[in-house]
Image (cartoon, rainbow, N blue to C red):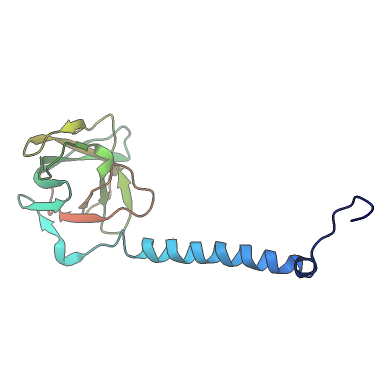
Length: 173
């Protein structure tokens, strides 16, 4: 250090750049594996937990009962609305929000449909414990779609890992 330049200590001078890359790649891979393992335990359908119309399905914080299902004309000639009448009771000990985005519809072909927010009326940002809200969740589907199952999430926003409980809607009249 006589000429004023800093010298790298010998024990650090021999660390190859590739080792740093391997370390960074290893950390990223470990994070992806951990996240993937966590996601694999969520978002799975449990057929044994399927409810039917007029029976409650519990998915915290709400206990959801489908009280009716009907079809209406859609926005175009090749679509229809499946309108699901629901009763949602907050069975938690804290206020909770209910939104149409907590529901999805599946048909017999495995297609998934999101709720039409503007055609639904089951939104409430603060449902106190023990209180119940009723309303409709509407889904626009192709006219030839059938065999519907309603998915009920505990999360307002599903980013691919929400846990759903299902209600078999049976024959729609």
